[in-house]
Image 1 (cartoon, rainbow, N blue to C red):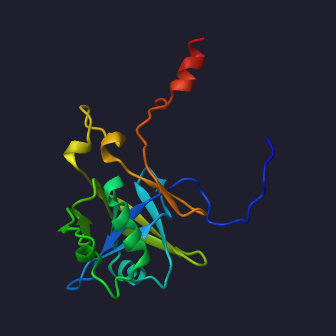
Image 2 (cartoon, one colour; image 1 turned 90 degrees about the vertical axis):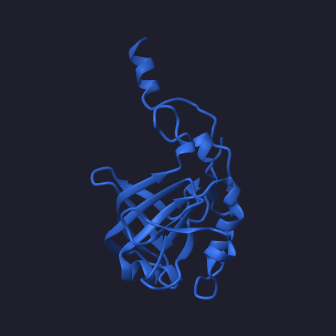
Amino acid sequence: MAKTLIKPDGFMVPLPATLLSCQKPGETPNIITLSWVGVLCSEPPLIGVGIRPGRYSYGIVKETGEFVINVPNEDQVAASDYCGHVSGRKKDKFAECSLTAEKGSVVSAPIIKECPINIECRVTQSIVLGSHELFIGEIVAIQVDENCLNDKGHVDIGKVKPFVYIPGSSEYVGGFDNLLGRGGFAAKKRTMQ
């Protein structure tokens, strides 16, 4: 099959659809939708988020050094889209989207109660990369809705019902409960032959 070159861009398919929550002390909490998010390290557990300096949440994360990555489910696509296109300078996104800000278990930034997974982070460093600043956050706590765990206590992706963002087409896509295999299955199968 022939390949086609496309313009270099922030392109990885798919990208996670996440809601970053943050809050300055005594002020209204805020939410920003981010797809420039990824795990960077296992020990210590680090996650990176890219935020443009012009975004309202950028100043909050820069000042407080804390944030929560909330993984929304398929029922929260409209709220996620709204939070990515409306500024927290003008609107209370929690109120507008009927979402609940609850105190984090470790950080001061709030979790979004309705999201099935909440990953609490403290910024360890940041790097200006160009259009975005990469905030590297150490994961200090993870909260998961009990009904999203399987009988072994692991996250059941079919119960979480996350969705992803597709850059270029700007589409949100869900339906990630089709198990194709488990880590190591191909290597194990080959060593048994």
